[in-house]
Amino acid sequence: MHPLRQILAFLLFAAALAGCSEQRVEPPGAPRGGDFVLRSAGGPVDTRALRGKVLLIYFGYTHCPDVCPASLAAGAQALNTLSPEERGKVRLIMVSVDPERDTPERLKEYTAYFHPEMLGVTGSAEEIAAVAKAFGAGYIRQPARPDGSYAVDHTTRTYAVAPDGKLAVALELNAPAEKYLETVRGLLR
Ligand code: NI
Image (cartoon, rainbow, N blue to C red; front, side, top):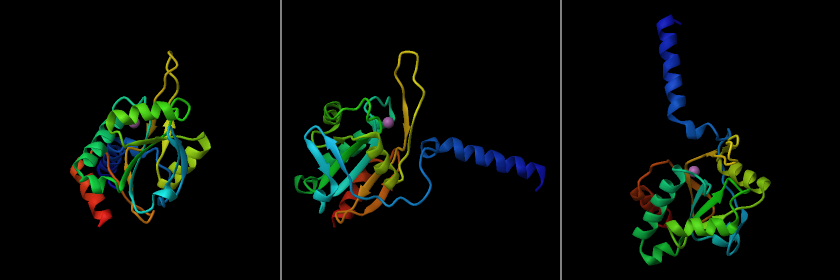
């Protein structure tokens, strides 16, 4: 390869990496989704009991400084745009990737800030890891800061599960509320 081309190829590669920092945490292989049972403040959330509904599943954590709030706000906005009948057939679920700090109660408080019908669920570290892997979502806990706090880098997609329980599509970060709406209505049809 010509040296200049080599440099150009490297630059393009580097740019691609820089542009998708949220994706480097994701495991390889095609995500297949799948049922799970995790805990919310209101009791267990079993996706098998949610057949017939569209699930919007987001992996995040309540201490997240910026990405989670933006994504959850877009999802909540989409919910508010649906008719009450449609909204009854949608569940917005935040799965915590920080089970150590995110108790079901803390998650409830956090999700209620975005939408009263949003569910926040957590489980053991092993349970969360298994669910994330099934959806092709990833997360990496960063080293603790001097004050003991820490960040968790995580997938920023929202996974839409069809009424039949199958993973249908992953909405990218910064997808507008209209895109959520279009996806939900498409899956409810
Ligand atoms: Ni986040």
